[in-house]
Amino acid sequence: MKNRNAILFILFAAVLATLPPFLNAYWVDVLNAIGIYAILGLSLNLIVGHAGLFNLGHAAFFAIGAYTAAILNTTFGIPILWLLPVSALAAGLFAAVVARPIVHLRGDYLCIVTIGVGEIVRIALVNDVFGITGGANGIFDISRPSVFGLTIRTPYEFFYLIWFFLGVTIVLFHFLENSRFGRALNYLREDEVAAEGSGIPTARYKLAVFALGAAWAGMVGLIFASKMTIIAPESFSFWESVLMFTLIILGGAGSIPGVLLGAALIVGIPEIFRDLANARMLVFGAAMVVMMIFRTEGIIPQRPRVYRLEETPGEERP
Image (cartoon, rainbow, N blue to C red; front, side, top):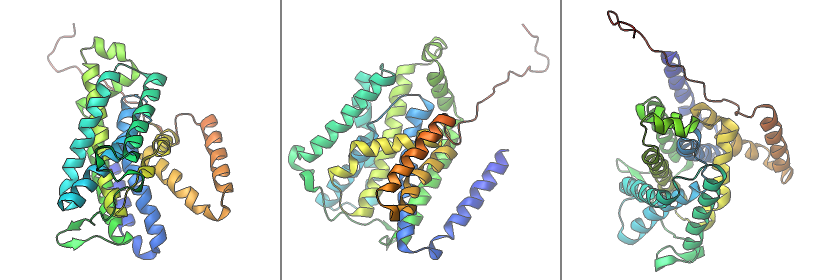
């Protein structure tokens, strides 16, 4: 089964890599948007899908990473890709600080507080706190990324950068999901009291998953900033967090294929129906309602895991 999944993943990557020459720049840019939201969805899926912590302020971490890279790049001229670990660290540390006092909350209460965190960050950016964020106008002239001396400018070139990063994210998160850390998060999601009773330090795991998910969103923020060369607070509004949350619920919380499919549907379908103008969102909303009624766990839900205790030869059963 594992080999079959690996072969399917490689075949899908190979087909995808040959696709851009047959598409125009507009549809390649749509694929780029799908890739960016897929990575953001996977980073949020760690918090929502695996740990069961409702977070509707994920756009704040996305913004922290983007603004950190933009400020350092435009002020000190540091190459944008060199700032990848800095953006991750800034977003991760910010998440650890803001999550520390709210980590004991669950469900609706945590959801409301994270909405507040997201809005505080957005308002701080609009009001140009410390005079470095550019206020409502944002930050201009962010450098394009360079790889081995090649400056990435066109949608076709960004396609390979974004989808390579997505491929790395899928592989790493797959191994994380099957690691001790991933299994502990699943216990935490299913029953926090039982997990704590089993010796899992739940508060520490919650902080760790918040910081990890935020750090990954911060790195996506850097890619987004370098692609657009301009960022403004309106790119990190509450609705961006809603979009990330929705694609997880639609695809299947805790499921990597589900999140990828959710990103493709949420970002891709509105573009397909763009000619229908305002009606496209009405049709899309109706489809969401129907899906949530008849398939509440998402289109591709996470498969239940089964663990068996195996008796070691020569060992007596107690």
